[in-house]
Image (cartoon, rainbow, N blue to C red; front, side, top):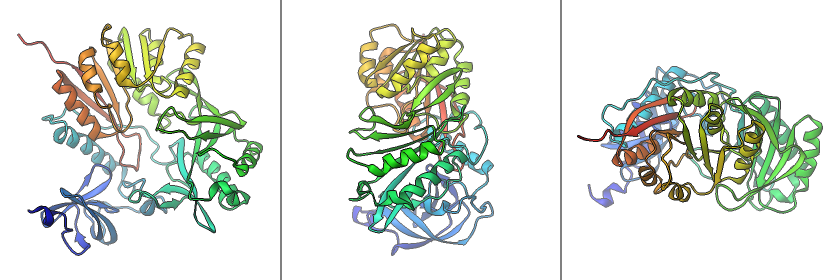
Length: 456
């Protein structure tokens, strides 16, 4: 097929399609005129009318206009905005079907991207509940026209459109109570007229509730400058019993470039992770499912076999690393976010784990300094969705840890990193997947690798 032909949509923009399986990311997959179609808003077995959104050469992206005949496996979503929000693409099918799809995402990625024949993947498990589980949500707050302020999620198939959210079906009910407070002030109340919401500025609203306690926290992240309505809101929220209200002044870059200002109460929540108590700042990352850290951590501890030394990369507050330290291991934790490191150091000191070493810096640079030292018994990597950074796998090949456990949230980047490590002489022993994001297309997994046996 010529390049010009390939760049053209397979029809005049509107197609009729019967997708037959899920694709990674929660879109349904079908074929038309020999082309793969990635279809948003449909489930396998549906017959739909769809509109082509983009031609990517190897595949076409499309969006459902109408479900002509629903699949026998389809159910009514429990969220009224599910079809518009797009954050929970698997919600229209039962949870057992969701888990079958997520297991297939992992197996397919390892076979197709990781080039692993017969991938050693364990059955997918995960804790309930299916709804109301997220203890942290982030929404966008902005003025989308001169007379209207909107508070909601970015629509999955649109980079700019925001779907107004009155309540989130997968959020902890305590967060929906906080959402009501924010809406009453900034969407329906006096805060909507504040100049800080003009000029197309989108603020991030962060709502958090403690997993193991009663703390609730509200933070707004955005540019510097006056925001009188936020200060007024902080006083109102504090009087309503909210633990703390904070403002996060955005910096450049994803991590390490922001500062937090406490407006009322405390700008952190109490949390206990694998037996260690933390005071977690408003903008610091934690797993969103209330049982995620315990589920993943208990698996790591149980499968690691009491290593003497542990190196944790992308370690955040050090929840996993400090659990290994509690078990007697010598632990080093590498993280770029200074607030996360301060949180971890505070927790380690109060737990009597002061010998645990936190290293602030870029993972690649830190590994360059560590490769001359003794290889750790266990290396735990918990990278962001983009996976190990460029060159990190090669540095791990030089460091030569005795075992590697990669905690990943994206099957595709996991498979890519597994392929890199296999080329450097590691063997994929097994992958253990977990369903920690019900209704969404996300799946967590831990990939265990070890050096290939010496030949001869």
